[in-house]
Amino acid sequence: MAQVLEFKLPDLGEGLTEAEIVRWLVQVGDVVAVDQPVVEVETAKAMVEVPCPYGGVVTARFGEEGAELPVGAPLLTVAVGEGAEGHRPAADPGTDGGAARAGEQPGAGERRSEGSGNVLVGYGTSEAPARRRRVRPQGRASGATAGSGTAGAGPSGAGVPGRANGRVRAAEPVDGPVPVISPLVRRLARENDLDLRELTGSGPDGLILRADVEYALRAAAAQGGRAAREAGPHPDGTVREQAPAATAGAAATGSAGSTGSAVPPGDVRIPLKGVRGAVADKLARSRREIPDATCWVDADATELMRARAAVNAASGPKISLVALLARICTAALARFPELNSTVDTQAREIVRFDHVHLGFAAQTDRGLVVPVVRDAHARDAEALTSEFARLTEAARAGRLTPGELTGGTFTLNNYGVFGVDGSTPIVNHPEAAMLGVGRIVPKPWVHEGELAVRQVVQLSLTFDHRVCDGGTAGGFLRYVADCVEQPAVLLRTL
Image 1 (tube, rainbow, N blue to C red):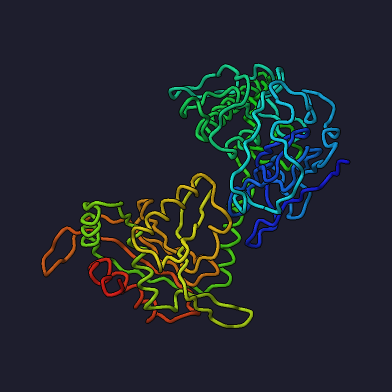
Image 2: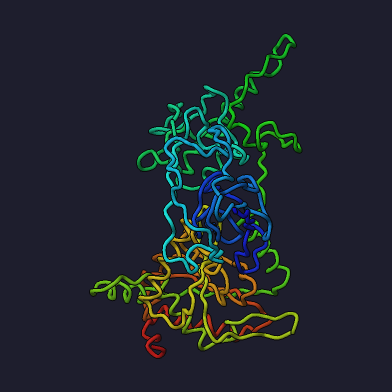
């Protein structure tokens, strides 16, 4: 006898209370295996594929793509056990419940019903089961899942512009799945009623990039603006009939047909949610709770750059500059542990950590994130280089887990990559300090009593004035500058 089990949005860890559905990976009527990813969600910290702990037939899904669900809300139901096949909806290729679909292998991926208890991909599962290949039936709108609330294609022949060789043109409609670099790009198109089938991707093998979608939206908005001007009053006092705007022109006011509050032409409302919303909340809290102060100093980084070049000239893995700066940070925190701490406002205590979990600011398409290098104090420059590279790649791909984005005790912010010299960053709450590093550029400098051109960098330290006074902060920053100017100073801590 089949039993229908309800799978709820699991606790994704680190105090997260809700998640947004980015993309459903299964449909009603699909057979799923234990620990098979069924939905991709975006939390305030990362995008996560959520695996289902049951094996059986999907009988219902809850929530449309783009909807936010609280932890504990139902995600889907699965019929498990003997007779589960009887819970498949009647075959209907035009609905979400259609079980008999072109190219689908009956029973593919089936497994005996059992629950794993896992909530995140990779937690106790040695190998994720292969997903079944689906072939979209003829006549069904690509990129839209019936019953999921996904915006379908616009009117036939709407002519939403694509991009090819820098020119705007209408692409030939694509039959079947559309290759898109990221679910976020697909969502951007969906929110603006942009039909991806009519775009020409500029990525490898026609892959549609975020830039392609934004280009098409700008072009459609421009066309909509011209149409609005043409619909203005005629000199004789009559009003021309307004031409229908391209579907992508709804970008300024949200979804087509929306009856929400009117937004003046050209204005855009951007919801503060997801990563950007979490960052906004955290920065605002930091400003409210932390009495921060900033001090800075210019340093001659010529010798540090020479030392790195000498190390990388030898055999072995290359060492990154940020890894050397991180090594300097951990050495400085060993001397000034006051800055590797947090303030427990409830107990009115300063908590000093016996480990350094080093966060570093990384700018991505999804916004600013701060991945954390665990136990950075126990890693050498080579290990730090490898971990920075791994976390940076995961951040850009949106694959960071909540655990990789939380728990930092000190942050390194290399804003020099943006071509700026200095900054007064906001402390990453609940940490107590952040070291900022500007760009390293040739500047006139007095070296050994003579004016010379040297590689100069500005270092800044923003700190919570509750954990220490200016003397401690200045001592930390001066030690960091000394290590930058004379890398041999680090030999004392090796």
